[in-house]
Image (tube, one colour):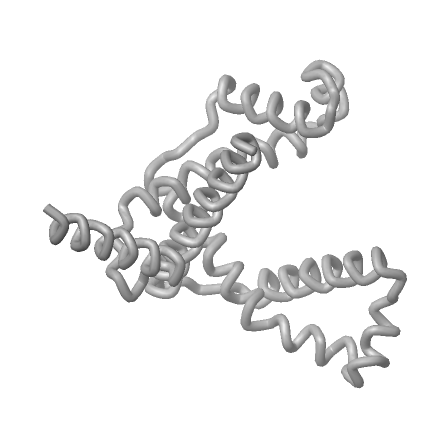
Length: 187
């Protein structure tokens, strides 16, 4: 029971952190003056479409069948993803700009730690996992570490007002303030 409670509390904390991170990134990227190449948006739309196609296929539905059911063409589906794709690319460019501006890098120790985490998730030993990694894979892992550092930097410097905080966070703060107020009355 205590284990379940700890897992639920950990999941709630992770959810809270993710919501704050998402909000801080949105604020920063919305305020950034970024030129977004159309080719990057197109690539992101295609990646999103591949993801949807994959998820549909896991349920035995092809993208073409999905389009028949919804009455949309693939081009219409792509168009519906365009705004989200543009926002994702904008955020990626902002994160890359912060990483470059702050000269963030991934040390060999951080790379090893990251590889160890992925190896543990896959159930392989670190040595076995490393054997499967290409130079591109290693670069991808390094880039992820740098991006995570940039996001952490953005979040740690963010000051969210009450209206900018995720809804769950606002409710928790109100509940906490009410408890403090009630505790004050009891004294």
